[in-house]
Length: 536
Image 1 (cartoon, helix red, strand yellow):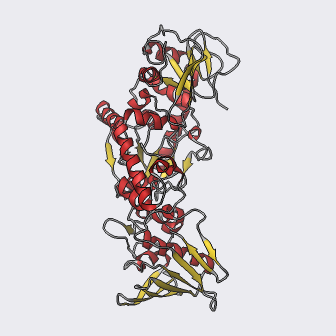
Image 2 (image 1 turned 180 degrees about the vertical axis):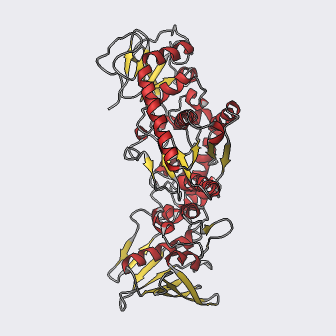
Image 3 (image 1 turned 135 degrees about the horizontal axis):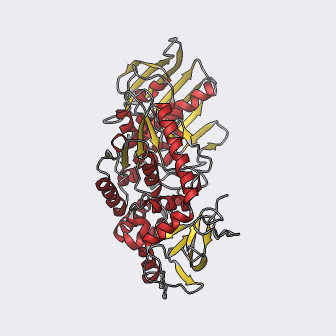
């Protein structure tokens, strides 16, 4: 378990109990983790939280851990009421003027933690070197503008020529102005580093209108706004040589990332290998590394943000929400107006409740004008047959979504009725026979071969996908053979398709849109007639 200690002689945090500069040994840590406080955050504590008697606004005169601020190793300020959106600061002990300049603090921080930082750096660089040389892939840094991707960039550029290390910024459409400014500054400071910006296939607000605001449970935005544009670029870059992503993922960031592997061979993006050189670094270690390198950081950190990312992320902390309201009131107002209007149109929830509860949405509420409940009914007479019905009809391109299962041969399709068979692409053995009525939105599947239960589940998924598809592009970048295109309409090249079924099995619910609007736990049984209704 990593911790942070404090050297009272040198006035800096320690990453180990003993200070390398003066030799002082500290028995007890003061916090599990810690981040620096910049002058802009000190100003915020004074002007917005009404805290008087603060020292002159100087970088690093205070350090923070959670909701507490420390000076000279002792807790001096606590902040409460963050989750309510109205934080209140309380002084525990008087704060004093810092007699050390930020430049001197950086130097002291390095001298006090030299060996620890050198070990971290050398281990990470050796790891990057071994993986890059071992895979022979194109190294790419997905650059978010945050401290972690900045640290990875600094490390990687020590062993990879700057001109050979592509940096890519996925512009989700809801990044803060500070992040865009920092991206520009980074490019100006590092003119030799090739840098690209990629954008999603669908505007964030348009996607919200179709899929509902992203929530902690239904967080579709990372797939549509980040994975697709990055994957589309990687596919173009790696037509001959695949991509190796050097990411700033760290286990200390969240509970969900604690089990994250340092090397991932399977991600949302086909043929991508993702490595995380600083996966076990703490916040304090990342900051000590960056500060002692003397590089500039995103101004959002100077304002008090602990993490940098999308402004309307459902995982934003109460503190980030508060800072958004302070620094970006227009964008926050626009978002709250949209969420309120959205819920008024799709539910009876009052606008004030919607602005608080959108993060907890468990599905439903959208695609309502396109989709109705999709009903899957098991045939009582034939255990190998089942029907899927949608009151809104069947899409014209339905057969495209069935191509991953095998060779699709259309026997009849006159715009009203559909008859097709799906055969094994290798043996030619008929797997599925289907009869459909487009106006009635009814399709009957008869499974002749294969794992019948699994095929039933997957075929139903693909029907749902055909109804819910918004061409977000995730299927396209998930496909390892490049057989799927979503540019104009959903299409699968049968010649290139290997029937690996990644587009069916590797995406939550088989489809981002269908999963986002599916009510969690919403599958329900009606009576004893064997009818299963799946609410999209």
